[in-house]
Image (cartoon, rainbow, N blue to C red; front, top):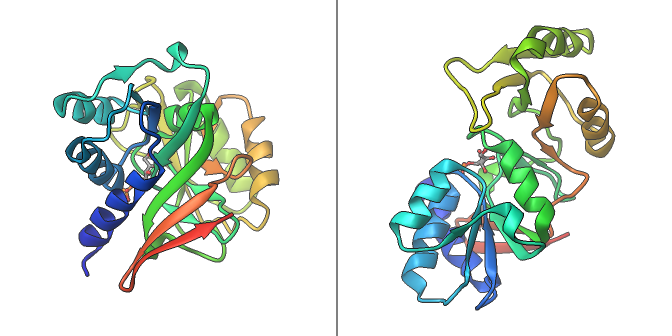
Amino acid sequence: MTQDELKTLVGQAALHYVVPGSIVGVGTGSTVDKFIDALAASGIAIKGAVSSSLRSTERLQALGITVLDAGEVQSLPVYIDGADEIDHAGHMIKGGGAALTREKIVADLADRFICIADESKLVSLLGKFPLPVEVIPMAAAQIARRFEAIGARAVLRAGCITDNGCQILDVHGLQIAEPIAFETDVNQWPGVVTVGLFARKPASVCLLGTAEGVKTISF
Ligand code: 5RP
């Protein structure tokens, strides 16, 4: 199966976690696009969705799904999103699509984070995928120097302005052995808006697309 077919498979499998009549938290990316398409085609009646990006909002609305503001809801039963890497404890690197800040906000509203990913995303140690960090532009160089000081290399994502008007540093050369501690630490650096480590609130379930079908990993 191609990577695209695996994404379709897990996008479809995620429907099982959608609570009829509820509001669904929706992430961002090519895998989530498959979920949005499957949701629209499924006929499952939902009140609407809270979206983590302008990209997902446009897709949801184009398919007739109502999009609510995060501020209008107090909680969500599930948040469904992809990942750039996920480890065996459900810790994730996210932000390849530059939507990490809104993704973290919507994920925080949810009781359960359902991660949908093809099998290439499952890793033993996070960090091979460059860690996205959203930063206030005036602090970008200063934050890059902090990463250099710990032996990593932060590269400003060219031409990328986030939905929040900020910039992204992609940090290469990390081996993140203690994701919760590292997320907590980088969160404190002045000018960091969001670090693309989702470890303090990890995935609850990962639906992993494999050649043998969808593997469900519960954390
Ligand atoms: C966007 C994300 C995505 O979930 C992540 O990049 C995975 O994307 P894809 O499903 O296209 O592989 O974090 O900010």
